[in-house]
Image (tube, rainbow, N blue to C red):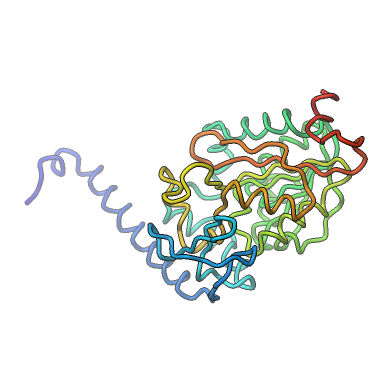
Length: 302
């Protein structure tokens, strides 16, 4: 039956049909690409703990030791570069997920407040000058802002096509590779927003942070961390359990264990704005006086 709104608004109806057809085509292409990704089977957590089934999502297990939520059939580490390419991930997959592609991300980050929130985190916890490394720096807007403020900045992206796009559009230095397997200069501040959940080796990631930080350096890591209800996690963000991108979803217990094993200090663990996840602030102790923490040094030095 032809509905009245189709007669009254033929252009709007045609546009809606076109968008649905377009989304269907992109979804089919994305599903086909995802189906071809090589996978591996995971039977233990990063910490070596045994896994039990996760009731709300059979694609994940729960570590009996640290509580971490573990993707049981993640993409192989070798396939990650291709998956996170400019066309496959930042354009095709984003369109299917209903979020803006890389070309629109900078304006979104400004509009929804996350860019200002990240800058405020840096003002609160980071150094007022020095060298910065951002792991997973697309679309480059944060590094651009920090460069204008006088920081020396280097970004990291998994795929060459994304790194090239950021160099051309954000005018910042970007190095290609999967962190921590990237040659980087020592930095005073390391940033990783929405990246740690994608890493195939959490402990290597945390130890990579420690290796990259200069003495008394600080890292700010934003990632999903369940801090309240381990049995029914991430109620407001079930999409965290997507089965493809997110390889590990953390608990406060697993974050503390990772931080300890990497010889870092957990300066702060707090909820991010909105439903972005949580923020872990990590400090590297080197020349701090006995009994004085990196956090105390920050407060003392303003």
